Amino acid sequence: MAARKDAAGNAAANRREDRLGSYRDTTAERLDLDDALALLPPEARLCVVLAYNDGLSHPEIAALTGLPLGTVKSHIARGAARLRETLVAYAGD
Image (cartoon, rainbow, N blue to C red):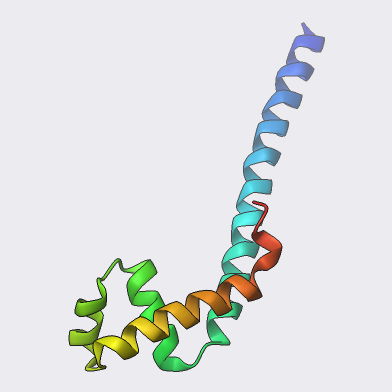
């Protein structure tokens, strides 16, 4: 009976550690993403966040920010490329 409780306790601890490990990885990734976003110029960062985080279309971003549509598209393309370069360590994930 004691062996069964120990096994159940170990299994629960392993599941808890798996969840915490995943949470820790997610937190670290989020912090790295925040740091990478901070490297972008403010207008580019705004366009990237509005596009990828908030799901706005390019014309919606242009209307919201008052930037020309071509500028919005350039900010998003260049900002996303810079983020990919900065976060290359996560490419295999």
